[in-house]
Length: 199
Image (cartoon, rainbow, N blue to C red; front, side):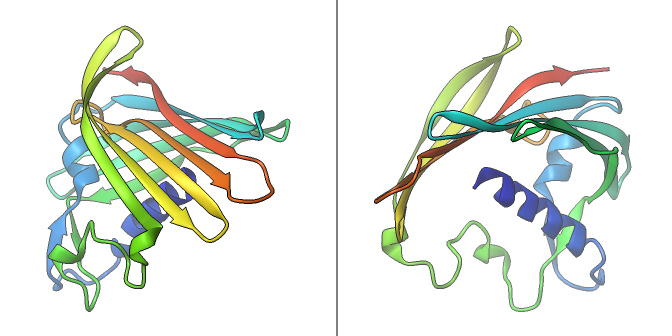
């Protein structure tokens, strides 16, 4: 799912922040993306989950750049939304983003962006990519798009993602549709940029 993947990536960033600096490091792309912008810059992402054509949840995540330093930066994240009709609102969370991240033991830089060990070839059947211009609140952003078709036991999944170097964090839009091969509802999760504020 989109959300768990994004949360897993964020969690990895936070966990790696406490590893000894003596290890080999690699560029943290989140730092590179956000550091190009001024303090006070913010983005808001809207996420919706549709199950069997019915909305199951809707949330809004606003991320604001609080501080930029030579070795890292500080973001503040707030979340509001509805899950099964229940209102949710989280207190602001501060996230420290380091400029570089240490490699965990046994990993190499070239291992990144590869399929996890043990992944079967038939699970990721095809990947397509291209370029497209997306418009958000009247502003156009040149974006790269990626489309991946995956097949797992009991379900098929299609993931669409649009990213732009002009947007902090790079994510402009993402869609994931999971269709069961037998019984069960089709689940579609959409995350999209709805606001980009500059100080």
